[in-house]
Image (tube, rainbow, N blue to C red):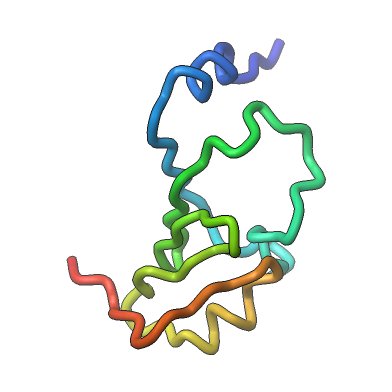
Length: 97
């Protein structure tokens, strides 16, 4: 028997700041940052930030706001791999580790 993550709804309902860490694209190279989610949702509007292998994004009403980009990754690459609305304001710094 395979068990899923129990209590996921409880986690998102009681947390103030949900940050999702994920790969930016799937195995086929398609964007996972989409204009609209087509999967069942555990919580709506609860994710505040996404950290992907390409960058760090705030979730805003306008779209995915690019805050930082991964080392060696250009804004143009992030634009090409993001299907949802991407918000880029000014110079986007590279992450520092």
